[in-house]
Image 1 (cartoon, rainbow, N blue to C red):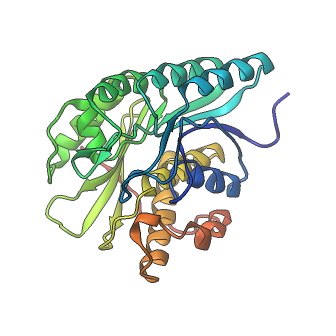
Image 2: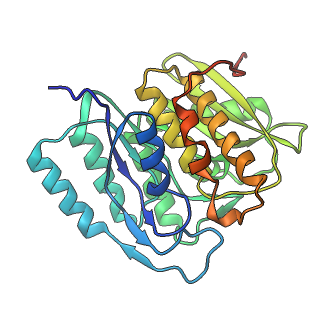
Length: 292
């Protein structure tokens, strides 16, 4: 019997301080009327961006126990959504979850958390990059940022990219397996104050773009927030461009609410101030269909 509430397996780390990963995914998806079932990949005292000396507990063994117990219960999920992984060994567990726990009409979202601003995360290495290239082949949707897209494609990081090259990147990302690739933090050609989110839907052969207004601040966890809203929006029945639009608008609103308070950027956006807006309908959109 299908649950009246959509159910998501959220495979992310849990940080005790800082708004990232599960401390973002759980409230965002819950506010969108979706049951979140977390499978923690690691426990940290804080997230890894802007903090030093953080504790880190690899939960690979516990993930296998989660998997075995969920399998015995015959649990199924409308979406499998993975983010930060604590070790290369966890990649196979996520792949097994996608194969075993996804409903026949469900989908898998892989946010290949590897790095940002042209650099690997402190806990990542090239072995994880190679393993992540395999994991994205199991996904229906992937949501890398611009740095992660370059890493997945073995391309050098660059500060600018023209539209034909970007389209080639997106086609190559979906050729790895997923139906949809959504790349965030894409530099806009000719502008230093605007980035964009650009997506490619391979079955429909369509490219979509939503521009993002620049605010001079960097907040960890915005990628997790974006991917969570995108996942929830698609589960609610939104089209891909509307789901991207909602995610961009929510993250932008969170950044603006936080920037005005001048709170420490490493703590993330003031998510609690804007969660209620996720229940509001989309009243306007600015997405573009990129033509050839």
